[in-house]
Length: 156
Image (cartoon, rainbow, N blue to C red; front, side, top):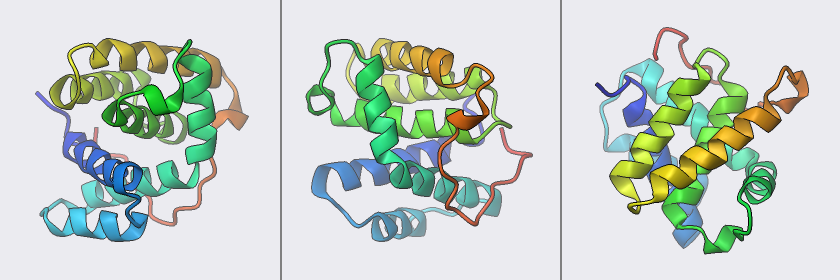
């Protein structure tokens, strides 16, 4: 069964994809995507938080994706994979209430559903490296928190 935050992650993917592919304005893309949904307030807040933190920290995230993706330039990766990796790394570093294995499994399942045949393996490998290298007891590993909205801790 998909987690209650799966829809939020899928919306985040949609928004980040628009930003990446057609250089959509992040706030406009987010508002448009949310206007098409009827989400619980806590899920909407999680979606907003995830997208805003991902966009705000994209340079840091992209540098790390390149670092963990042996012999892969960022622009050679499938756009969907790049966007999935961006929001998943944001989630790993900024949402400590979500278990690491949940974040990685959700990203892998979303890659399996929306991207190429081998994307789930690729995403899993990169996120495993990101987890091992960015999170081992390092309190400074988290990204900048510029969002005022906080998701509920009761959603998994």
